Image (cartoon, rainbow, N blue to C red; front, side):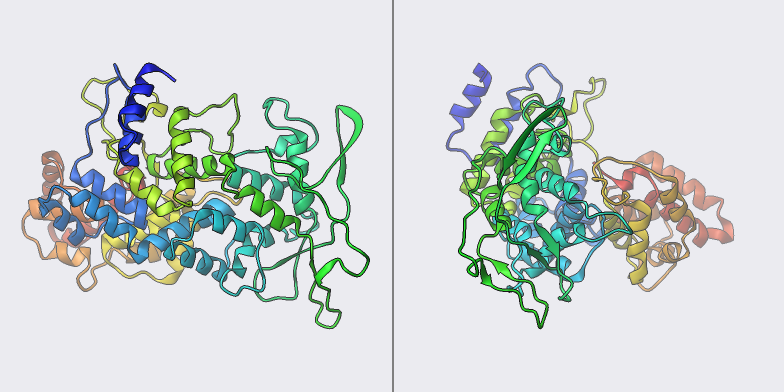
Length: 515
């Protein structure tokens, strides 16, 4: 640890987490130009998008601008985190993160929303997802994570290797895919034993077809899995094992005593073995002393707030890809564990940091720093769900249910592709330009944006209402002039021009990014 880091750590040992976070970030910034704090408009839009998944309404924006209280930012953070919209936003975010657009199920979405509404600890959620309990009506839909991956697609075999890989990626931050058939060729930390120790549990799992809700079952496991490297003919075997932890012994049972609940031939309900590899893995993965589990979720929360992981990519934690700020990741993982994996608490602390509240604009003439220094706010792409909610908030029109599905189809990544980078596409552009239902949202309706604009005579008033409603900021002098010129030549096409101006801002990169 450098002298600067030691000083930062020692001087703030008893300070709140957000102060310690800033100290560790600042310790690597001397000599580098750093963005100032974001103004109210930039902060307001950012925190709304991050924590409730939409831009603020025009009323919420104007009220925040008028508020002169020194503590209005912490108060707003607390208000958003306490809202029902927070649970919806986090459910949307975690659904996309965990399922990667493979599909959805209403009970699964309800499970996620209720979990975030209760502020359920992440380790509890992880255990429920990896080892779902079909007897618990409140949590049984957590099985969708496994059950969707256990479906047959055409004539293809069930992709157990991908299921194994996804558990490693999403819960441990380790992409073990290339360690299935041999030790990873390029990452010395990832061994074939790591992959096979997880794989034995998931290949032992089956999709249940006897229930209307998502459900899986486990076969009896009586022996270890055998495997060998494609580079070495020596045969090896392993039982269930979480990377970095001891192998779990497979117990022996007398014949007829293997089940807690034997299979029911009449109902075709599968049995429940006394030894559950899934349960054992879930307990080991989400154990309080599994620092890899804690670091993985801490890194993902940092990514959600800051737009880039301390370890980046998020699923490549290993010694040759160290964190940009190792002491900071250790601190976040330790504090998250000490606070019993309270995600809301951690997000609040991150939002209170100066690092989170930096502007996305550097001082004039400053050289763009490397993103891993977090000297300037990084742009984050809006998800399809955030775009849908933000468009409807901006125009003030209640949408038809079908439009959200269209937004997802137009803006989301293909199934099984993580979402994290801004990637404009022709499909999305054509949707914005031509979809009749979307364009109808811009039409004048009672109290919506276009109706308010039609009632304004002043070009400056029109410009202010458009920019505050759509971009959550006041227009510049140049933007006011541009709108005045457009309205001057509009003639009897004024309503159509107003609609086009709103559309132009909704289709802009500024609207599609969280700055």
